[in-house]
Amino acid sequence: MSGYFTVGGFFVVVGLLFLLLPLEQLQKAFRHMRSKVTTKIGGAVFLALGLFMVVQGVLAL
Image (cartoon, rainbow, N blue to C red; front, top):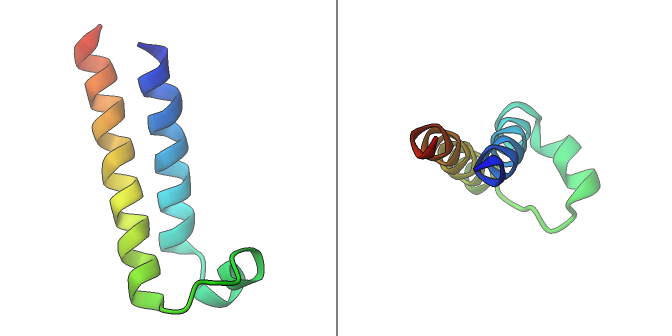
């Protein structure tokens, strides 16, 4: 059960970082990021997956 919360929380944090940080700052750590649009879409996917996993962990209790 706590695995859902841990991994879900990690995905939420990564998704928020990808959504909130400008592409120029992300490119310092991830040099292969080319497009702002795909980076934001990836952040939204991480955020949605993380929230889904946290909700799944709550429902499994």
